[in-house]
Image (cartoon, rainbow, N blue to C red):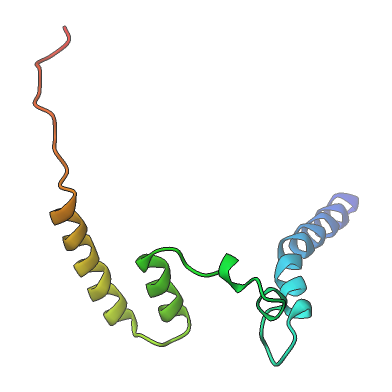
Length: 96
């Protein structure tokens, strides 16, 4: 019985620890839902640095659909493959 109570208390503590960053972000939001970091002027820190990041942001904000995201990622992968093709080195035989 004591083991079950201890397990439940530890589980609740771990859950609170895992959820606390999200709760802190909600508490820090001000100016009608704008995160505190954006309102204070350092928005460039959280801005995506790649096209993939922009696409994920648009997908999360429901600006584009999942299908549009997948198609854009396919085009991005094809473009990347043309620009930087992967060259497989030739096999040199077995080491034995």
